[in-house]
Image (cartoon, rainbow, N blue to C red; front, side, top):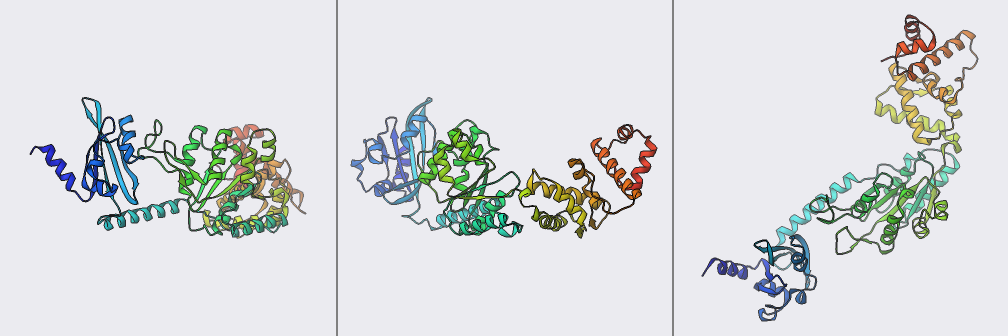
Length: 454
């Protein structure tokens, strides 16, 4: 008996593998007893017949047409869950057939394999959850203004409706993402992933692959083995589509289909994947105006805008500025490890005068800058002098109260020196020339006012 016959005999008697081979036309040349058992057929009913007539969803046809192997795919046949592989057979660089085999997960002694796969699957789920977790709760949304309280109350109510789509609107920096995190963390989906997608940050030609994933070899440069998309990563959890107004029209139609069918198809894939995902989207643009101008699909707008939460701008809730300043003081003290205990009333007055085009995000940045300046002087009170940069931005002198002319003059001189040093990037020679004083005088004044220089 030659080697080929011995190999065929080994395959024929193997109870753990379902094996077959086909010629270049897809007709069955060999099939073992285990595969016949799975099919419930006799050998004479299979040999010589086109494999596609026996198993219509076979992968061998694609292997024969492309010349590329397909490995480790799910193969469900007659109620048997299997892992299959199909590889092309060549003779002098010409495809002469395909060899396919499958390992069953449910009819043989595969308990150990199943347990290992389940364990690895749980580990993967844990890793996905750790890297895609909502960080904020409703306690992180601070303020007593009636508009922010109304938005917060609506968000708390809709959080319990775990499938309801939410559109969060508002200017940049108002805290729209905080609302998305808080809604997820207060919902029944809180133990599942929270996946954020910045629609404005992903190039148009990559957005579909980023959202829906792709199969191995789907396009040039595709990662070997394929990649899960954001929607799959968010399965059973929440996907947060930030800056949804920046999504291209062509992509909008594909997103609409996903929302309607509740399923996705990876790039290069041949089957649909059912999903259970809540969608929260956010925008700083007026989507209704975009719809009117043909820049945003009306049907998608209605799909996303089931419940709309409008987050007010900071200039419309000035009464919350002092509350937010105190909140950021505590938060930044922990992060910066600074010893600042409080903020003065005069400093709050300065904050109240500003219009806050960058909203709460800008307020946090202003507080961090002021606290860094105060920390350099080991100050415990965050006074108005540390907000001089904000006064300069508004082109007004920081409030001084009832003080002597000498004190007022000194404080004005200090603010001018601070501003000029910052504008010249702490170049002392350039600053002295700008102020019309000699370098030694500049040094004395910097030392007098304790203005730190690089």
